[in-house]
Image: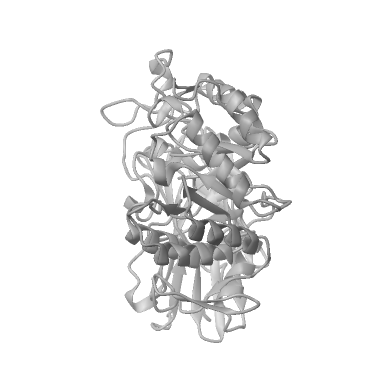
Length: 499
């Protein structure tokens, strides 16, 4: 990328119908290029920006993911690179590292394709799958940031670059750890079981000033994986449960899916008109915004200290992001009730609404858009689900996202590579023990899903909780040659695993 010049590009605006008056404005300031868009009559959908230059075919590139990653992150030589890379990428050229991307909380979805003859940035400013009605408004789409590092420490370069991309991360003031009941219960739980889970967490963290959380996942509410966010008969009184958990010295957390409800009071005008069946809530509708605000406020008033909210990407766009390529919404002919905002603006508004309603609750985003939730959640689930039943899911999903998105930890948010799922007779302990040990050295969130523990397991969990309180500065060593690195290093020692 020695020939790359940030100001030397060609741009094309693609609209719904002909482009009558849509125009770009760009402003160059050092290594940052700001791109804005305006239109009165035209309805822009995409902007393509192309930087043409000859590339070294052996340069290796690593991109990011739209929301969670799906065991698919890896370094790839430019000559073999056929993927669009969401948000940013790092190009590894031995003694020099090049980073190119957009700063967090942009007002458009942006991906990059790097090939032998240059780089294409693909800017999606759609509303749903249609053009946006700007009606004369000028929108600041994104800020491109290009950085060059004269170093062979690729991981340190990417860490620094991620910090430059996010000016105002929302970070917890201490390590977040504890229990989550999903990967042993899978939705089958009750009040008494959660009390037992919290009792175990209190025992495992005995003597630690930094207290653990106990997160109640899907299954506590009336309808499975859907609202309304009120307790079912097995849970009865969510405030009483929160109080009982807190009395043990454990912090209560809870899971919701804010954009999907089977509440009979939901009106048709509150639903997204996408596909053949309208099911999911449209967050641009004021009544939906009030419903979400009320749900989050109720949970906060019950006394929960952590809120994990899930499925916002799927419910907004109809697919998990493993199914998207150059942009996040590729289905045409649908739009939100408010057509004046881009998809990215609508997502940002939703995350800000939840953030503001949550007040002093800790927020975990799951299936949240990574580059948009940065600064609006304390913790982000960076990869797809691990498992209490299938080691292969933990090996691929967990290890991959920890290695290739670890540079975002404490730069965008506290990263969460997901749980250690401990379910008897499913995953050999020698495998789970390694995953537990790696997480304990990662400075990321550490959650364990375990209903009971043998003497051996309990001792290992307790030791991991104590180890996790220290600072380690973990990094993968063999991440340029495998999707699931086995060799790692902290500031104190090297760690080696056999996945």
